Image (cartoon, rainbow, N blue to C red):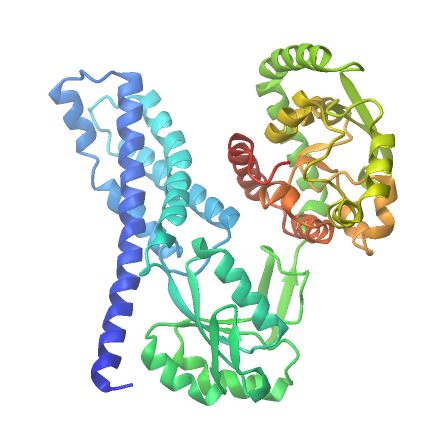
Length: 478
């Protein structure tokens, strides 16, 4: 690459990085202003006087405080954040600024009578609109070629291939694999459209081409001496270097690096297994039950009538499932199948080899002839799960958690049952918002294990929000 083209590449990458940061700053400011405007109009009305409008405009410098704090805690750093972690940081920092603003107004004894209702409305709207705005940006911006940070993957083995596939399938993460390097010449070629361009000695050349590129070291089985050599030789050439350890399945929001007397240690905290976390989840479940009590009751009456009109048989259907500790309990659902569904399934699988393989892989059928007409609608919208609120009241389930597996599926859970069955199953969870029925049985297990090991109240809030979107769009349902 010539010096001129290299300089152009560096300039373009700097502009791209700056543009992405400015875009998120602008989006955050827009959501904060929208929260203020909506709150004022909701409390005072659109025809407020100029004097009253001016008293709120006087607070505009506070917007800079929000942006400054967001920048300090890394919300504009470009480093990938899990949605639940981003939600946590946004909520804490936003609340801190509002509390500081309230304290400043009180201590300075401002004579302007700011409305407390407007203040709390703005606060609540900010906590809602800020994550929404960022989510919209991440769903829209991957359509533009300048979006995202270039990523050089070091290692073309199974781990490198998995990383390239994951980043390619999830462009909203903002990490674009542009090249891969590996000293093993037999691995040179292509991985999912990304060129394995040669050995690690080409790192300086690629860094010049992709200025500001991130690196992902995907060699979990490499010898310690070689690992240290790579980090010491090439680590300083990248602004960010992600090291993928040989700890698949233990990737965690609560896995943190610790200095243990000068030795690198990894602290793993499984939050959901702690008593206080289970109390928090119980309180959250009860609050949600109270909020949705009336609409749930009305929907139950309506759906019951539709089921009785559509086909013969009972309105509700109970099925034995495994709960916490492997205890068997009856999961209550609206009936979505014909009463002779088991006989129909046995006949279908005996007659069609392709359907039998599909059922063994997903434990479901995409075009299932056992399902009634109203049953298809209920499954599409997940309304068949509504009666499980009763399971929550009985302490058998939670709103968010792993899937409630059937007893006969335990033999297929490949020892993951030891982790999954340590907590209450949920009506919704990781796999329900990450592809639902498009996922294989083994993929669902992996996601449920991930949930147990990564639980936080913010992860539950994120999954509940994603569930609402999935229910509205019917994404992944059949």
